[in-house]
Image (tube, rainbow, N blue to C red; front, side, top):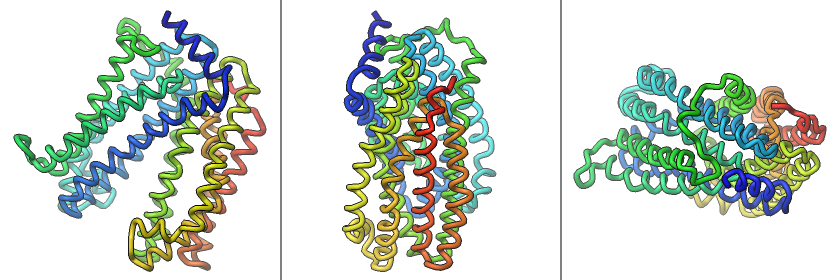
Length: 453
C-alpha cells in the first residue's frame, strides 16, 4: 500500500500538467523558506529591545552560522537529487536507504558543529572582530546554538528527503509550528516574563533551539510512524559509505557555490563601506528587498529541482527539459513585472524603510540598476536549481566562480571608481546578466540529462 502511494505520487509529478506540478511543490517550498527567514527576524525583533550590543552579538553570530550551515545545505542538495532520481525510477527501497544515510550524515556533522561551536565560540567570534560586551553576549548565544545544532542538521536533511519524494507540505507545516513556538518562547526567555529566568541574548538562542527541537521530533515521527510516504525502522540504520559518498559528491559543489557567494557578498560589503553610512544603509535595504523578490524563485527553483530529478529517473528527458524552461519562464514573467514596478516606484519602496533623503536617493538608484538584470536572474535561479536536481553541481559552481571572480568583483571595483556607489550596482547587474546567460547556455547544452549520480 505504501509503495502504491509512492507510485501515485511519481505519476502525478511526471505525467500530469507541468504547471500543476510546479505549483504543487513550489508554493509550500516558498512558504517554508519564508518561515526560515522569519526565525531570524523574530529573534532580531526581540533582541533589538536589549540594545545595540545585543543586536551586534546576534548579527555577528549569524554571519558565522551562515558559513557553517552551508555544510547541511550540501547534504540537502545531494539528498534531494538522489531521492528524486530514485523516486522517478520507482526504486522506493533506495529512497528509504538514502533517507537513513541523510539522517546519519546530518547527525554526524552536527556533532562536529556542537563540539567546535561550544569549545571555540569565543576565539571564533574574536576572529570576526567581536570585543567587550558583544563578545560576551555572542559567546553565550553561539554556545547554546551550537549545542542544539543537531536539531537544524537533522531537520534540514529530512526535509530535503521529503521534498525529493514530492512532499513539500509536511516540511511547511512543521516549520510553521516551530516558528510559532519560537515567537511565544522568545519574549518569555529573553525578558524573564512570568516564572521564566531573564536570559537576554542567551534566551533567544534557547528559544530557537527548543522550537527547532520540536520540529525535529515531529519530522522524525513522520518518518518512523509511516504517516508520510516513508517508513523507516531503526534496524535499518547502518552506514552505507557508497550512498553517503554519492550524497556528498553531489552536494559538495552545491554548498561550495553558496559558500563562494557568501564570501563575495562580504567583499562587496567592504567595497561599499568606504562610500559612507548612507551607501551602506542603501545597499543593505536593497539587498533585503532583493531577498523578498528571490523567495518565489527559490520556491519555483526547488520544485524544478525535484521534478527534473524525478523525470530523469523515469527516463523522461524531454519532460525534464520542458519543466526547466517552463519554470524559468514563469519566474521570468513575474520578475519582468516586478522590475517594471521597481523602476517606476523605486523611491517609494526605499521610503518604506527610511526617510533619510540621501539613503532614499542612493537606494532608489541602486534598485533601478539592479532591477534591469531581473530577467537574467530568473534564468540563473530556476535553471541553476534544476541542474542541481539533475545532480549537475560542478558545472554551475564553475560558472558561478567564473562570474563572481572574473567579472563581478573587478567590475564592482572599477565601476565604483568612475560612478561612485551607483557603479557597484552596475557591476552586480552586469555580472548577473553574464551569469544568467552562461547558466542558460549550460542548460541548453543538455549534458546534465546524461548525468549519473
